[in-house]
Amino acid sequence: MIRLRDVRKTYGRVTALDGLELDVREGEFFCLLGPSGAGKTTTLKTVAGLETPDAGTVELDGRDMRGVEPYDRGVAMCFESYALYPHKSAYDNLASPLRSPRHRLPAEKARERIGEVAELLGISALLDRPVGRLSNGQRQRVALGRVLVRPARAFLLDEPLSHLDAKLRQQMRAELKAIGAVRRTTTLYVTHDSVEALALGDRIGVIRDGRIVQTGTREEIWYRPHDTEVARAFGRPRINLLPGAVTADGGFRSADGKVELPIRAEAAPGTEVLIGVRPRDLTLGEGPGHELTGTVYVTEVLGRSVEVTVRLGGQHLSLVAPRGEATALRPDDPVRLSVRPENLLLFEADRPERPGRRIGQ
Ligand SMILES: Nc1ncnc2c1ncn2[C@@H]1O[C@H](COP(=O)(O)OP(=O)(O)OP(=O)(O)O)[C@@H](O)[C@H]1O
Picture (spheres, rainbow, N blue to C red):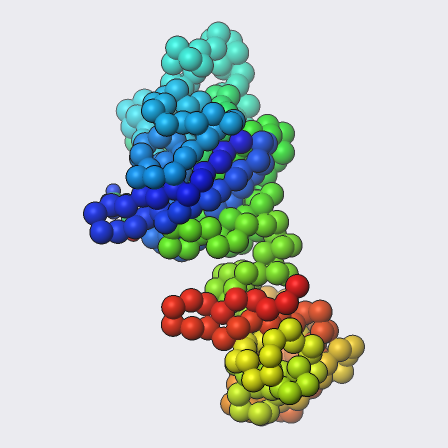
């Protein structure tokens, strides 16, 4: 279990962590997701004891870590800039954590364990090679192996898949998930990739400007995003956000008056809002729910589906339709769209100082 309370960390004039609160439960695979500079690595280093917070507390398994050296914290880390011994073989790199006094294993046991981890990471055939002669992706897997090979109170992983190509990354994601499920070691996993966070995290914490904006399961983050920025971070193509205002009867009218939706907004008439709908939640043609009409602006094939951009008055809405339904569409064709009321999200309008918060349950 990892618990951070009101953790602050500044570097000169830069505030890296600004009152960060984080709870990673026992055995959980927790993904910390955020853009570059949000404070992800600083969070990991603070948990590991490589950085000392200016204020706040870090607890591991209920124990305050103040004054506890990194080595004594019982966590295993893998940083993006991994430190491996380039002249040693991949095997020796994997074996070195098991030679430390704390984790020493009998040779036979160590071999078994290394074999198991190497198999899992697909590097069994590389074990005799010096690490200096491996590709970046292979090295990254060795670095990850070094973390996974020894028992730990928690794994701290900083973008461990960032150097892998798309296919390998996908495969490794599945394997990491399996390792997580089997080992049930508390894992704090840092990424800026929302697909990775959705695929891996038992829960996800969204970090921005040194604070956690929202913590939740993938469903909670997807269906009830805290604000427009969280909504924009998940899903490609991105969520559509139409600006407008709440009408006298609590509905939505777009800023240009062209789109009206009879929602029941929990906001005062006149409130400036953004209505959100994800491209995959818009259906071409008539369907249950609210209807919209517009014209085709452009279409783009995405494998078996097609992204259709539809012009509605002055706005553009993106939707993803099965290829069969959308191939005949040409620019300027009139189209009807439908959306189920439960797939509409309502937000306050974005302000310069902060993204619009979600309104309602
Ligand atoms: N040693 C340091 N000295 C000065 N500033 C630092 C130092 N480490 C981090 N920072 C700053 O603190 C902020 C948070 O950095 P951090 O590395 O935690 O972000 P991050 O979310 O991990 O970003 P990235 O995804 O780019 O690695 C950034 O503004 C960064 O420039």
